[in-house]
Image (cartoon, rainbow, N blue to C red):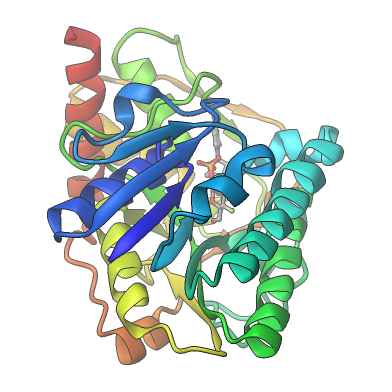
Length: 320
Ligand code: UFG
């Protein structure tokens, strides 16, 4: 297929673009480089630098079999202090994309949704039927886009899949996580191991969990990318399907730090800090639906392996 990957210079987008090329697809990456890196775009892809709002019409006019839409603002903390950036950057931009796809008859869409659409869950693991009550603006904007996609699919025959990612981590060979402002747990802990930061702050030790720290479901970025390929194959015209992607096992912040200590051999000093606004206590996925409908099966579920891949990537960047 000929595919447009928005946000293909970012972490998840660039890994998916690489995976699509490895599977024989033709890939065009569209990215404004506001947070992505031009050198993360895989060499087999054609790269268009630009803002979706300005160029999407002319890009889609050349004809595509589908769009994988990763381009987004994705920092939970920032979304609480600068909501306009998220409503504009996520919702308005995605509506622009949906309209351009309709105009040019682009038949398929795979959208990066998030576990943050659910908010604090009533039941764990979280199934797709769980109530969606986001606790932060980031999750609210992604949920709004999911609703828009549902109505566009029903009204205009779009074949759409939203993938609700839990906590993505690890690296796909030379492509990994590198944000200018890093807020994610595993890369921050690894920065301590590299000596780039003195200690890691644990955001709250008084959560209603076994060791008092937040629990998350960490999924390897390559497994996540594979779900996108399967989604493209299984998307059905006029339907919007939603799938949770995680391993179904939760790890506390303290367990993640301990795993990083094992992998790196570094003591990684940690201190307790106040809770972070917008954080739910526990987010663990039920991915039964993805397994049943898509035939998806995570091959890299082990947290030690996920951290090891992230660590190898981090060290290789340091040496480069
Ligand atoms: N944390 C710390 N110290 C830090 C950084 C994070 O204790 O320095 C904690 C957080 O409070 C949270 C956990 O580590 O409990 C994981 O935090 P991340 O920032 O790595 O990830 P989040 O769970 O906040 O969010 C991620 C994605 C979101 C997505 C969400 C869904 O960034 O886009 O997973 O699970 F919505």
